[in-house]
Length: 447
Image (tube, rainbow, N blue to C red; front, top):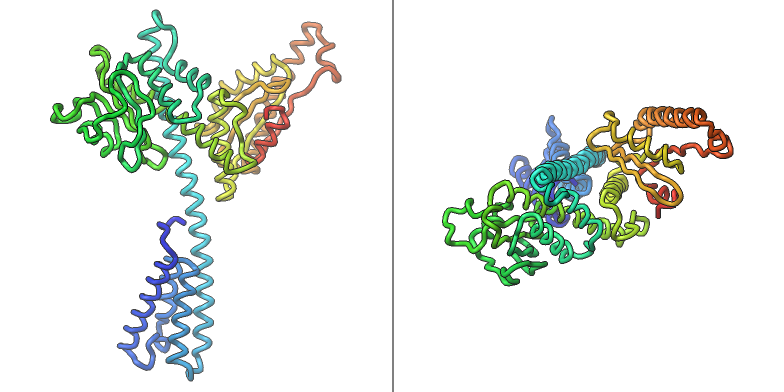
């Protein structure tokens, strides 16, 4: 629930203690009426309301049960004894219903907020990576015509990322190639303590000084620390440390750099190193999340192969996340799909989708070629079936325009034989829930 989860036995102990305390105070006030049920104000309902609304229905029933035991002891001959208990039992169920509904709604908004924060973090990283790619491309295009984003993407798609060791090795390849890092290591971190090393380059070796001032600062502050950030520079043997935080803000890995060429040692390069490290490890975590989902659920959305396009991996991960949210919190999301076997229409659809300004920042578009055709998917997070109706209708209208224009152009080129009713296959358009994405992939021959 939204409250911090605690042991039910601890909660029951607290409720029983409060019940006994309330009864004790009531006994001191009136020995013949310890529950104060004969007063104008119903104190009994007040205590039950507080406990039930704070702990939930189960703890409210525990308090009511102990009040009932005390009532049997002191009010056995009282004519209103049974009526009061039943009235209070009704209110306990009423408060419990309110508690459940309220906290279910709070949980739904909380999970949606957490998802939005995660997406915002990923989009921010992607934005900075794109900016760095542009800067790097401008500075090295003549001698090395490739952007850092392109190289990272190529490494992610063409290299193994099954284990953290493989991702660490790929990360160090990028750092050595683009930033001249001569000596560095990537280590595993658990509970803010460095454990084993994943991979290293240069003379840094596997054994590092775990108590080094610069490393401890990075682990404590949970942010990148370089030489100028610490006061006593003689306490460190390293020049830069970059921690990688998971979605729970826990450090799971750290990059430690010992040697870098002097001309590369400035804030701009260090920022690029930090972003590149976090970018590659974020993508590794995405793949690891998909693998974990695949192993835990038979109907999960699985990777077709380990070299699958990175943007399709990202799309699948978002579908898996939203499908889990749907199962746990009944918050639906929709997928709009288009299928065609026509290469020209495929290009036209891509141009339209990439230029469409009506998509929101969380909406995701992906196009893939599989089977004997081209498939286009648009993911609309937190959009129910009634809500997507108008958007799907608009997209259907635009797609119909593209088809009509295509047919007219072909008619003008005297190619009627290719667009006759028998020779022309129309666009297949549909929108489904994220929970049916796996079936849709099979339908289009993509899985």
